[in-house]
Amino acid sequence: MLSFRQAWYAIPLRLIVGYGFMEHGYAKLARGPESFANILHALNVPAPSLLAWATILVELFGGFAVLVGVCIPVASVPMAMVLLVAIFTVHLPNGFSSIKLESVTAAGAHFGQPGYETDLLYLAALVALVLGGSGPLALDRFFIRPQKGQRSKAA
Image (cartoon, rainbow, N blue to C red; front, side):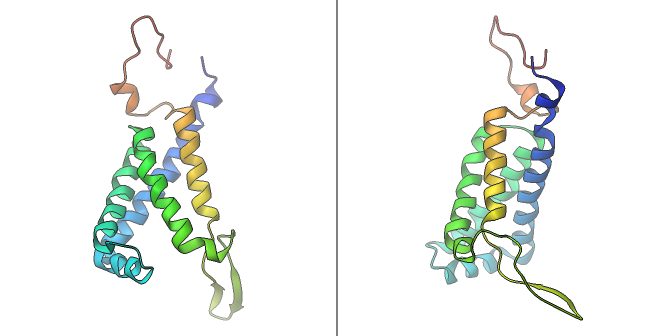
């Protein structure tokens, strides 16, 4: 039986990863998928319109799956692929740090391009959820029944 701490670690991970992915997907959708497709085209990504839509759908539906705790191992595969593509096509040349303070003026702080730090944090959180489970209050608990002779993890 898992301790209280061991069982509930997944909740903050699911909240931030799920919401974060959904927010990024919604932002791309709200600006128009073709705007994101133009960015992908500028990065020489093949089939930019198709991949723009695929990315938006992965971020929205994968994020939702993580947020509510359903099929996290399955949802994590395309989510990890989106993160890896972002790391290798956009963030890697910018280094590790996600915060690059360039200057501070009367108008406020000015930042440079982010590195791959945040993408690695998302990947680490997905790995933790896949290995450790979706935790309590996850929809998986309602769909996955223990095998005959096994005790439920919730017990």
